[in-house]
Each structure stands twice: as C-alpha cells, then as structure tokens.
Image (cartoon, rainbow, N blue to C red):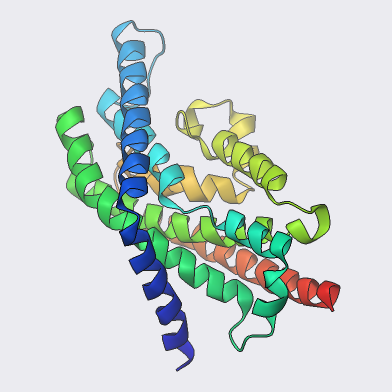
Length: 261
C-alpha cells in the first residue's frame, strides 16, 4: 500500500497531462525549434572554422539537442508548490496521510512520463532525420544518454521541490527558480560541453548537481569509448546527488511543518 498510493498520484497526473494535448504539442514544437537553432548554429561554426571542435559536428548536434530536451522534459513543479503556499492549500495538504513533497514528486514523475513518451519517440526520430545519423558511439551511446537524461529529469524535479518550498520564506518561488535555472544552464553546459569551457569552470561545475544532471548525463554520446568504468562513474555521481537531494527535501519538509505550526 505504501508504494501504490504514490503510483495513484502519478497515474492521475499522467492522465491529466495527456488531456492537455495542445499544450503538450506546442511545448514540444518550441523544443524542436530551439534544437534546430542550436544544430544550425554549430553547423555554421564548423563550416566557417570559427572554433577547433574536439568532437564531431554530429556529436555536438546531438549533445546540444539533448540539453534542450532536458530543459523541456521536466514539468514546472515549483509553480504548483508556489501556488499551494500562496493559496494556503499547503496547510491542508500537510495534514494528509501522505507526505506532501512525495505526493508532489509523484505527480511530477507522472507528468514527466508523458513528456518522455513523446520526446523519446517523435523527438528522437525527428533528430535522427534532421541530423542525418546517430552519434559516433552509435545507438547504444544514445540509449545510455537518454536513460541518464531521464534520471536527470527526476533529480531536477527533486530540486524543484526544494526551490518551491522557499516560497514559505520569500512569498514566491520563481525568483529562486530563475537563479537555479541560470546556474543549471551555465554550470550544466547547455550550449556546449563543459570540456570546451576553461578548465577552472569545468572544475568548479563538477562540485555542483548541474554538472551531473546535464553534462555527465549526455556525455556518453560525445565520441569517446563507453566503458563500464565510465558508466559507473556517472551512476556514482547520480547516487551522491540523489542522496543529497533526498536529505535536503526531508530537512526542508520538517522545517516547513514547524514554520506553519
């Protein structure tokens, strides 16, 4: 019964998001637009020899496309929490038998699953047709990267929960989320792999969750040989940050309850 109640919330959220087909399709089309823009930007850079690229243009195109996809996959869960705090509904949710944060996380995973189905089928097919080929590492490297992108999206939801609950202190969560998102874009390597940044930037980023959620997650498609050690290294980073996010969520949840009481 303990797990089934979370599945119920995820299932309800899945059905709700499936019903918003127009919103879902528009979001997907916007994502495809940004992916095309970045693919063409890097093709221009390669064609004009503006940079000495350490990777093939195909791998760069797949990398920047998947980073954009990662941004669009996760629903804006922090806005739901922000609305709960502003409306006062959070006081009602906190007395329910299911922990509030885990309820919202379950709903987020349900919504995320809808996006995953669309982006990992139609989206990947679109990229394959537009780019013209799979990454250098083949379909295996793409599959590994997509798996880690899914894990990143769940971790991103957990950090959205942490950001959302800050609304109890500053009345709204959006300013905190904007800061979090900008750090995610810069320190995660949205526009290009972090290995192409100055060494000190990559080293600094490696101590943040953004490095794991974006760069490491999509790194398997960047040419190099995929080994068991490299995969286990990525898994190890995810385990560390999932653990940190789990304890942060628990601590913030307890602080939240005490504050409202």
